[in-house]
Image (cartoon, rainbow, N blue to C red; front, side, top):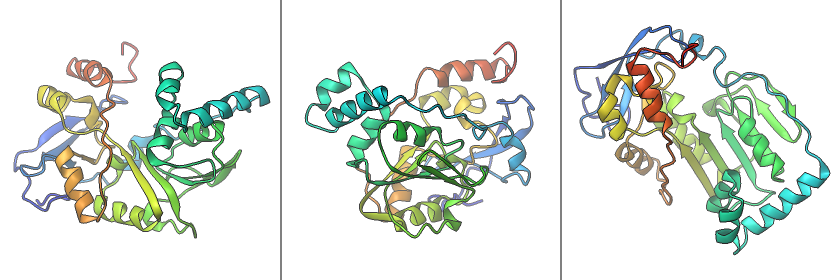
Length: 271
């Protein structure tokens, strides 16, 4: 078998990983590439959608924001995107505004969230005053929520008729089998100075410790778990430049892995 990322031969001995989010304990084989160190499932299950039941795409009721609070957030947004950011971030840190500052977008920028689920990340952008928001996900229905347009699409079939200043894969990239073509398609949809943000688990020390019990594998929904090297190789092939890297994992990857090691699923009563 050949690595989807670097085209090298995959290690012949797989890691057998159990589905432990819902606790079915169905088993799946993941192969670790000896060259780029990424993990990938093989084969991809034919019934993959079965494991997305009640995953991240459940309906969410969006609560209208009061005029007073919206105005306060507008002030915070303005200050956060100005030279006062170092001070504001220590007083009132906001993840969405941090991403906006890195990608150099403004409230009129076109923003696309790939694998948007129920659109909760786009809703946070909306609360902070951003206006042009689109989300796509093969497991949602076409709908409009406030100024957020959600479409039942995957990126390869999506033809929006416009280009985007920010395209986000917010913990969705690892759920996509066709990695290289997906990234290349994202590049095609970028504006001249557009930015792609990929938030994804990467093979790290925790994987070395826990192996098949590493919670970030999340079998079988995570199809490819990158290493930093494999991401760099993929981006080079797609003619993109990595300009910012930030590791934002929390203690969850250790706590969750310890739980899986004890054969306790994520949604069990004693989780």
